[in-house]
Length: 60
View: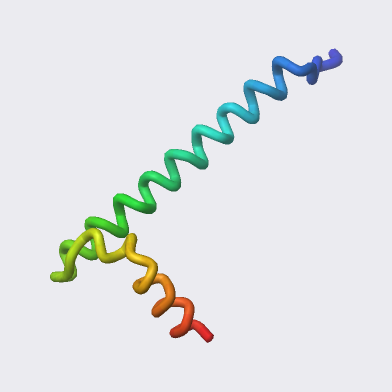
């Protein structure tokens, strides 16, 4: 039995993958905000560019 991998099938698959990636990004941001808030600092500090510069400098 031959499966049809047409445009509609591929579009549905890529749509599902896109939704999964979007949900993963949202949960990552929520996790960072909650973790920062529980850690005792400003929850929005994880969104500041200075925080990210500090993290990347730390990794070097």
